[in-house]
Image 1 (cartoon, rainbow, N blue to C red):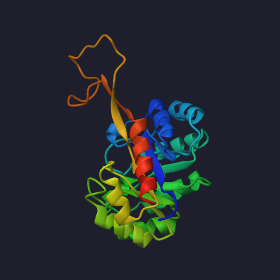
Image 2: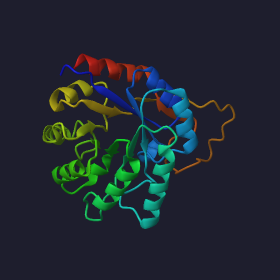
Image 3: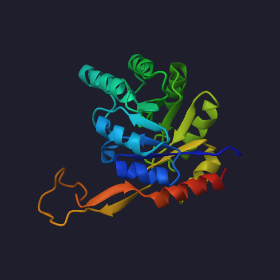
Length: 251
């Protein structure tokens, strides 16, 4: 490919956003709780990130962890979050909704797309939980989604590369297939060569030691098997820069 590939980095803090932008990210997916796969960010987080970075921000609308089949109350939360966050500096909106049978929830997806306009929409990795990914892709095209984030219905893009490659081909210029999930500096060149994606999605995270000097290590503040409160996962500017260089080298 001769065109420059776009690097999207998912972030859940101002520190990560600044580091990712400094490393050459083209776009940020702004979430909270990346350890849960990414949830809706707070208004304050989005506002401060918008003040600190100038690149486009794709904002996650996901009211809870777990599956993507939402109750009426959860859907109302999504509607209200989208309307609020849309006014605070979002450039794109990101969400995904499924029926109990594993299909795209057409009616609710259509409603959120309408609320998001004129902003473009990404259907996130809820896509990887659909019963028939090819049919789901056609549904998203018909609904007017601009892109779909996918690992090819496997744990990582590398494992799902055959399906990702097929989806890129089927999508053509109708919708952008955004590979994301388990992409590393080692596997990115192969992924881009084989699937010929125009964009890709990474976390590019590293660990930073907590600023806390006094540490009570006897109790966790979350789940018993959660990571230590004193080791913080943040975007690594150097890693983002390496991803940017690899993307340019394989263009």
